[in-house]
Image (tube, rainbow, N blue to C red; front, side, top):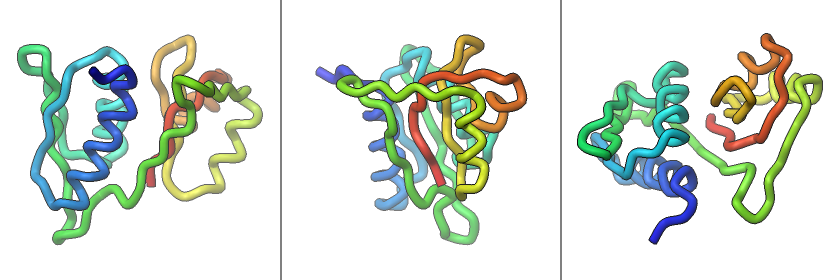
Length: 126
């Protein structure tokens, strides 16, 4: 039984890109759906759709090169990392993006900075 669905989703995406798969499917949760929509909007995956309680994620390649080079989970069930909006600006200098769970929902770090929101650091993707 999987208790951390977000970590499972990120691991499946990373492994599917390594294996050159076209798509993955996993159990649909609100957090995973919101997170997949963020990845779709940022261009890291081609599309996401919900079908019968499952998420189907189509992966994106550009001339055979995966759109995602790496994903790393920052907060874990055993260790939650929270950050203020001011400290999120430090991630602007890094390559890729950080996804943050805020009081307004799941946002990229750039959107959270614009709205002056802090929250829990979920993961980083590049």
